Amino acid sequence: MSKRPPAILALEDGTIWHGEGFGRIGDTTGEIVFNTSMTGYQEILTDPSYHGQIVTMTQPHIGNYGTTPEDDESNQVWAAGLVIRQLSPVVSNWRSRQSLSDYMAERNVVGITDVDTRALVRHIRTHGAMRSAISSSDPNPERLIALARASRDMNDLDLAQEVTCAEPYRWTEGKTWWTPADEALPAPDKYHVVAYDFGIKRNILRLLAARGCHVTIVPAHTTAAQVMALAPDGIFLSNGPGDPAAVTYAIDNVRQLLGQKPMFGICLGHQIMGLALGGETFKMKFGHRGGNQPVQVEASGSVQISAHNHGFAIDADTLPADVVSSHTNLNDQVCEGLDAPGYNAFSVQYHPESSPGPHDSDELFDRFITLLARS
Image 1 (cartoon, rainbow, N blue to C red):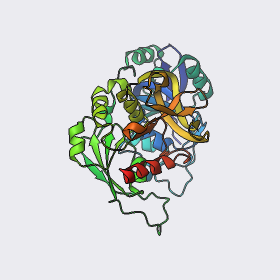
Image 2: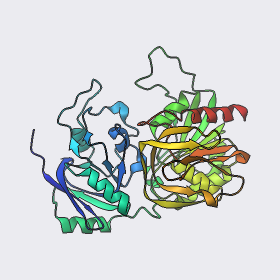
Image 3: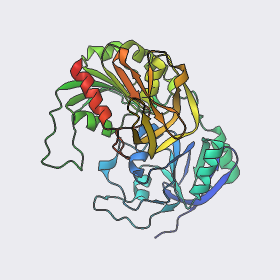
Image 4: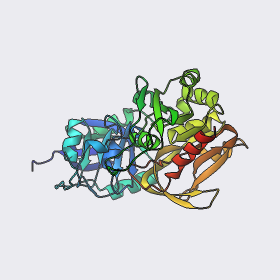
C-alpha cells in the first residue's frame, strides 16, 4: 500500500484537524456537516442534497464494502469532500467493483482519513455547521483557514439551479438490484407524475415507478403552466441542496400549482411547499443527517426511524391554520412533515426513499398513489 500524503481539515473558526489524504489529492471547500449512517457512504456522496458540503461520517470504519455503480443516487458525486476516522485497507463484498479511494479519485473528490471524527462531530454540535477546507496537496493551516473563510456561505444560496437537469426526461424503471428477478411490478403507465428536479435521487424515481407511475422529470425553473401542459396526474417536489428561501422561482411556481393536482414533497421539496403555503424556514445549528432519526406521526402517535439530510427546516409556528405539522422529530421537536388537505398536498422533511436508511416510511409513497387514484 502506498503511503498517503499528510492532509489538513481547517474550519472557519480557526480550528485545525490533521489526517491523511485519500481520493483525489488536492484542495476542496464546503460546509462541514456530519452523517450518522452506519452504511451508505456511496449513496451519500452521490446525493445532490450534499452539493457544497464536506461530509463527516460518524461511523469510524469506512470503505470496507467498496463501491458499485448500482448504488449511485445520481450521475456524479455532489459532496465537496469526505472526512472519516479510518479508511478500510480491505474491500470485501461480492458487489464491489472499485475501492472507495479509487472511486473518489476517479471522480475528483478530496478525502481525509485518520481524523478524530468523534471530537470533530462534538465540535460541530457545539459550534454549528460552518465553512471548511481540506488540502492533501498543500496542507498549510493559515492558507486553509483563509480558504475556508472565503468559501460560499449556505445562507441565501440557491444550489438547486446547480444540480437540476438541463432538459426534461422520462423515468420508468422500478426494479433495483435486490428486486427478485421473478417479481412482477406494475407497468409504469397507470399514473403520470411530473417531478421537479431540485436534486432528485434515483431511488425516489424507482419507488414511484414500482407503484405504476411513469415520471417526467423537469428542471427546477419549469413554470407552473409548463407543468400543467404535460397533463400530470400528480406533482412531486424533490430533495435538493441549499437555502430553500433562495429558490424563489420554485416557491412561486408551487404556489400556483397547489390545489390543481395531488402534490407530494420531500426534503427541499417539503420546504418549498411550506414556503409556498405561507410558512417560513430557518437554518438549523447543525441539521439532521443520518439514518436513525426518530420521527413521530402526529395522527397516529407511531414512531418511525427515518433517514435525514437537511440543514434548514420549516418553522411550524408560521404555518397558516389550514396546514398541519404532521410529523415531529423526537430529538429536537423540529417539524418533519406538512399536511394541507385543502390542497390535496403533503410533504415530509426527511427521506422516506432512504437509500441509505430504514424503510419505515415507505407508506408515504402509497399515500401519494392513493391521492392520484382519487383525483
